[in-house]
Each structure stands twice: as C-alpha cells, then as structure tokens.
Length: 261
Length: 212
Ligand SMILES: [Zn+2]
Image 1 (tube, rainbow over the protein chains, first blue to last red):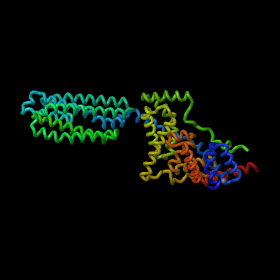
Image 2 (cartoon, chains in turn red, blue; image 1 turned 180 degrees about the horizontal axis):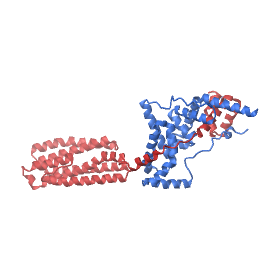
Image 3 (cartoon, chains in turn blue, yellow; image 1 turned 180 degrees about the vertical axis):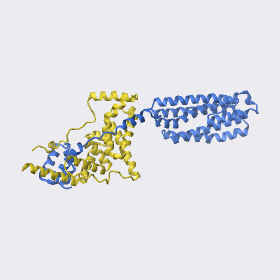
Image 4 (tube, rainbow over the protein chains, first blue to last red; image 1 turned 120 degrees about the horizontal axis):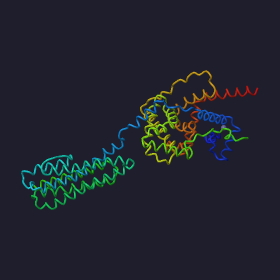
C-alpha cells in the first residue's frame, strides 16, 4: 500500500476528527507534501459541507390526513388474527377432547345404551363431537352440546386474553398449547380407565383387536410427543402431535362404544 | 499552523435526541398517541414529517416517496406500544423509516426495476458553479450510490447523526458505519469528479481576482 493509499483510507476519519493525535500528525505531515491528498481532503470537505446544506423537504399536506385515517380506523391487527388462526383450534380441540370423554361416559352409563336399538344414535353423537365439535342427538348428544358451548366460551376467553396481551403472544400461545395438551392427556387417561374397567366384559375377538392395536397407537403418540418437545415452537410438530392425540382418542372411543355393544 | 481538522469543522451537528424537557414532552406525546389521541398523533407527525419525508425521498426517489412515507407513519403509530424508550424516539423513527426504505429497495432490485431518477438528465442550469448548483449535482449523484452507502451518507452527512446512532438505525457495528461512510464519500467523489473540479477552479479564479 503506497503512503497515499494509506492516508486516503483514513481521510474521512481525519476530516471527522476521529483520529488520535499521532495519527492526525502523520496525516498532516503527509498532506504538507502531497497535493493529490490535499485535493482529496478538499473534495471530502466540500462534499460534506454541501450535503449538510441540503434542504429538508416537507411531506405533501394531504399525507397527514391519510396517515391518520389509516392509523385510527385500522382493523384487528394481523398478528392477532394469525395467532387466533394458529392456536385457537388447539384450545377448542382441547375442550373437544374433554367432550369426547363426557359423551362416552353419558352413552356408556345411560340406561338406554344397554338396549341394542338405541346404541347407534348415542355412538354417532359421540363421534360427531370428536370429529367436528358439533352435534345433537338423543342421549349423549345433549351432553356433547354442553361440552361444546363450554369450548366456545373458552375460545372467546382465549381471544380476549390474546387481545389484552399483545406483547406476550408467544408465551401465551405456548401456555395455550400446553393447556390443550393437558386436556388431551386427561381425556386419554379417563378413557383408558373406562377401558380397564370394561375390558373383561368385551367379546374375546374385540379384546384381542384392541390389545393388538393399542401398543402401536401409544408409540405413535410417544414419538410425536418427543418430536414436539424437540421443536417446541414448530407448529408442524404440534400439529402432528395433536393429530396423534385425536387418532388415539377416536380409537379408544370406538373401542369403548363397540365394546359396549 | 492551525490543525486542518479544526479549519474543516463539519458544522453544527443536528442531534436526534434533545434535552430532558424535550424527552418529557415526547413522552407526553407518545402517551397521547397510545390512547389514539388525534391531537397527539398530529403533534408527533408534525415533529417528524420533514425528517421522515426527506429521508424517504432521498432513499427511494420522488415517485414512491409519498406512499412509503405514509407506510412509515402508519408503522410508527402501530409500533409505538413496542417503543420502550431505551433509544431516543428519533432514532427509533429513523430506524423504522430506514427499514421500510431498504426493504422496498431490495424488493425493487429483485424485480429488476430501475430507479426512475437514474439516467434522468440534470436540468441545464447555466451557472455551472456555486453552491446551489453543486447541491443539485450532489442530490443526483446520491441516487446513483449503492443503497447501503447512500443510507450511511444521508444519515451522517445530510442528517448529521453520529456513527453510534447510525449503527443503531441500520443494525450494524460502529466500525462498519465508519468504513461505509468513507467508501460512500469516495464513490461520491468519483461520481462528482468534474463538478468538484469545476467548482474548485471557479474558486481559484475568484480568489485570484480578489488577490489582484
Ligand atoms: Zn498523498
């Protein structure tokens, strides 16, 4: 690097008074004997002087009106809608998981269920609950109706909470996810208890079919749980876990209702 | 001999951050804006519209400036709940404005669109010397700088911010801001070579007339 190149590299810093004394002295020594570098410094000086003298420009007068209109009448912030789209189904699904248990219990303990002619109606009502979260029929239908309206009220509560805690959105979402998961796990435990009580009364073929399928079903859930814990913020992993839970619930529910038949 | 640096003072620095009174006043305005108070929002707009519009205008050109400036202010009012007050409000607003500009420019260059200002022939102003003329030439040359150079040069030399503030606004290190500024100035020197020469000669002539 020639001495001119070395000096040129620090000319801006020299101009802006950012060099220490030794460096400045070196630059000044060089400038005293080098017209080329003096010219470069002079150019920098005039560039900076001219730039600092550039006028600011006012925004067009109509801009304020447009800004105020756009800012004061804005719809729901998009982040909230995104949040609700992604996580509200989880908490509703959690409530629906609880509804499955209620429906199953009602169908199972209702006196009419013991009679073969009524069982299909109750069974389908419980299935509707687990599939879409809606349904009305005799027997179990009314119980599922209660569970679903509880789920909707819960959804409204979740939405209000989300609006209030805009900054804590992610933390809130994680909590909501954990809560939905608890619903599922509780539902699974309850159904498992029911099955443990009823299993010895099931016909041998149905009992064998259930015991064959329950192991793989549980390990699918376990591996989905592991995946979701490795990637706690990944919606795809959460989605997969909840799908595994839903399948597990549907499987147990079918086993119970089929076993009661 | 007088140190050259003293003789070449940059001129009055225009700080983004005012004193304590100024801070209190801004807090009052921000609080009003958070409540959706129209008067407070207007005050905040009036305080910053010139700085924001000038910056946006120089960064993206006149055809898009108004729309982007509107975008910047809408984002300011939407983002104020997240403004923590640990940075100066001015720095925060500059950062928002610069982000809007740079992401717009990145999108425009991906689409392969050409800046409408480039290639525009400058108005043929007869007196080819003097400060107003050089200012026009400088505005034109600014438009030809790479976006990153232009951002730093506008913030430092036009708006009068220091490297610490620029680093916060752009999200880079202080050293990066300094080296970018030097490269930007050197590029400007190249772009304005003949104009700077013309102006220098006119001064030499004037000086010799005075001396005679
Ligand atoms: Zn030299």
